[in-house]
Amino acid sequence: MSQPGGGRFELDIEVAIPPRGITCVSGASGAGKTTLLRCLAGLERPRSARIEVDGAIWHDASRFVPTHRRRIGYVFQDSSLLPHLSARQNLGYGRVPSDAAELAKTVKLLGIEALLEKLPRQLSGGERQRVALARALLGRPRLLLLDEPLSALDIARKHELLRHLRGLPEQLDCPIVHVTHSPEEVARLADHVLVLEQGKCVAQGPVAELAATRRFPVDSAGAEGVVLEATIVGHDRHWRLAEAEYADGRMLIADPGVATGGAVRLRILARDVSLSHSAAAHSSILNRIATTVQRIEELADGAMCVVHLRIGAGTVLLARISRKSAHTLELAPGSRVHAEIKSVAILQ
Image (cartoon, rainbow, N blue to C red; front, top):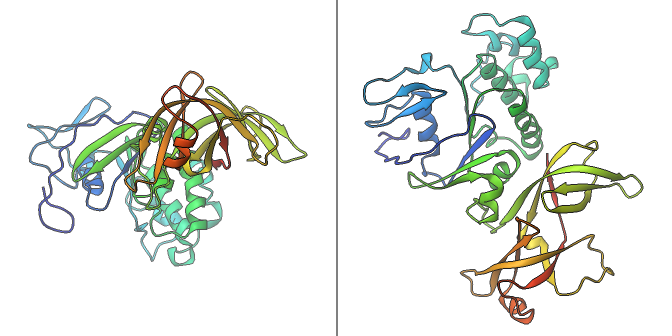
């Protein structure tokens, strides 16, 4: 098939996207991420493909449903708002007027009440993307496609939009496919992950599973780590800490301002985990957890390794330490060791 920039590109994948939640499609530039989105949207017509959404065939050997009949929402890197129309007019452009209650609900969901009478040039990048997202949602999509909508935003605007995106699965009864090259976005947003490489899917699965097995995309600094889903079970108001319970234990984290019973997503980087045979409590580290070594993975630099650890019945933790330290601690599969967690990122 043709690439958006010209030339030919072979996309050879067979994947099933969960019907709810956010599926992040990750990979290096040229891996096929945007091509996949364009095929789903009907903007590309592959020679051979089968695309089925909620029981409806959109593309196979005998049929091709055009874009305008697919009921998709599509948000691009650039918000693509019409510059001469207000935010409110952009929301209604080219579509049957939305139900007033639906419009009010969508506007409130994305926090754009105060933006409706402004022109796009009067909005920040994050505000423009929120308006573009609202416009996509008002079409009541059967599939929501997000093509790197955060890539042009600064850190503050990116975090602002991340918060709104993370809340979408609770509001939408449709799949969300989010293309990104950012490991941070994958860790914060994904329920499910597809990792593409040169037009092929080299890994797919729940975000926690891929992170634990190191098939999760990492940044240039090699910031591998695990993602844990947890529930707040208590607060220490004096020290501004909260107790988070995950599948096989509990840990203390900086209080994220989430009420008891609320869900949080935690990311623990391998470089922030040290190992010891001692359970001594005289340390600045608050979280010291008994673990079992599963395996030791030597890294290409020859000096470092990643130790795969198991907590309880199945929670996995990664520790990035020197090979010398692993030798000194006499680590081997089955060894019991204490993991000292120096930092926990709270991904909300």
